[in-house]
Image (cartoon, rainbow, N blue to C red; front, top):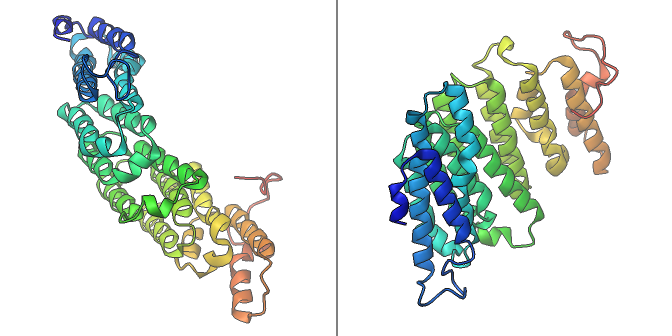
Length: 350
């Protein structure tokens, strides 16, 4: 390890350390391995890889200052070499000794220290993404607050936190949908929704004036998916997400709401139907958000609502409920003032 420090050329140093990591892959004194004992123990193996990660990150960042190429070409070269740095995180995640307790109490803190030590946008975003992709979902649930706090720190360097949040929420959503484990047991004492909500509100407050509306809508769609999977019966959570969207849209002009944003709004309105069915009729924010859609897209949402009512086998014996349903599906019954000729493919999936 000490001899490798003699190679300070960024590219040569990265490849040398990457070769070292590959060479030692099955020879680290991991817990339960043949090399544990005289060759050291798991803590030694962990410290070696963490040290290697720190040095490789420095070399990777140094490419910014040593290359005379144009910025676009330089950033491309750095992105091409990022896997050499990320391999360290992958290796740590594969250690048998890296239990959720060790990760929570030691490993994550060390990784965060390496990420925040250098204010480099590309490095911080990639290494955070590596952590999310490499470690199991159960680990992220137990350490979510630390991850979100780190995102708040690196956000000051214009790191694309939105993408990191979307990937993290998508992973946890898929985990909640497919796991056989007791999700309530894993999240006992943890309010994952409030953690994400606070962090997303902070992103909107600090970056709402600079980022494209469609990016925020994509973030809210991922948050809604997460809420539906982890808290499938919580109407209030869904209504809060829709409320945040209405608040954001109220500050935008109609010209700011592009086609991509409109498609995301349709997803926000139709996705809850899968888990909540016609309970969406009781949401105060649902019709408010729907008003931001042009007629044809309101008609698409209305059709989904009508199908949800039909599939629910609900006995419509209450006049107020019937009137509420008719109000929601009115775009199917009459043309709006902003009506335009129908696209023949209008009723295909958005």
